[in-house]
Length: 186
Image 1 (cartoon, rainbow, N blue to C red):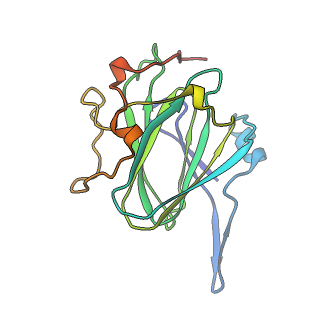
Image 2 (image 1 turned 30 degrees about the vertical axis):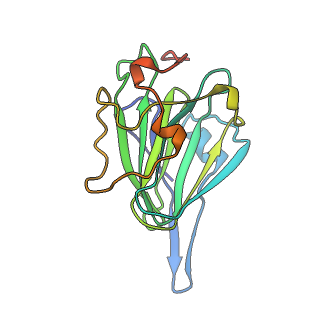
């Protein structure tokens, strides 16, 4: 596995080693041992799987407040997405900054998104499946969001795709109005 740090502290691109031959391919998408060798100690407790039927489906920007915040290891197993993480750790030097990457069934890249980040993605193809590991359970009480189009964050979503949103995501607040209890270094 190749672990590549991004411009946002703690946000890491994970590229599995893919072994292939005339029959197909094999890869480890997660190895506790290899993560520990990189200084990443996590205990994932649940795997989630989402399906989006239509290109342009936008999910996010989502996060959970402490004490139920989640670290996520996100991958796209069918189709292609533009995956985004936004630093929402209040005293971080990169607070409000975002990072985006294309994740696809073809490139097999993953994004490790630590606590203190809002997460979202838009589907770039029809019939997309996204799978992700989390280190804490879903908590409706702690579930929060930020509007995907916040001008303060200014995410450069792929051009020419009209987003399909849930009612919840349409009504999400701006970053400046969002309830956030993350502090850098926690």
